[in-house]
Amino acid sequence: MIRTLCLGAALTVFAASPALAQTRSDEVASCMIRNSTEEDVAQMKQLMLLALQDRKDEATSTLAGLMMKAGVSASGNCGVGFSEMTSPMFEAAMRQYGEHLGTIVMERAFTMMELPTQ
Image: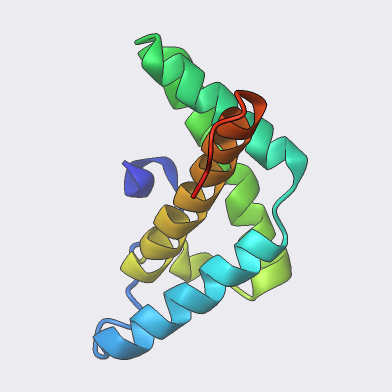
C-alpha cells in the first residue's frame, strides 16, 4: 500500500546489500522519529479511529496525508532522495515510523485511563 501511495520511480538503491539497506532504514526511521510532531501523532490517532470505524476512504486519505508529510520530512531532514521513496528501505523506515506513532497514541490512551503502559 505504501508503494501505491508514494510517488516516484521504483529504484531500489540498496537491493544488493540487505544488511546495508536495513541499517539505512533504521537510520531514516530514527531521523523521522526525531523530527515527528504532535500533528503527526494527531494524524495517526485520526487514522486509527477511522480504521476502527471501518471508514476506509477517509482512513486511506488520512494515511496518504501522513505519508506525504513523512516523505517531505524524510527528504528535508533525513537525506532521503526522491529515488528512495519507493524503495524497500523507505517502506521499512515508514513501517517503523508508523509503529512509533501508533505506540505513542496507545501509551497516551493508557495513561489517560490510568492503566500501566509497561
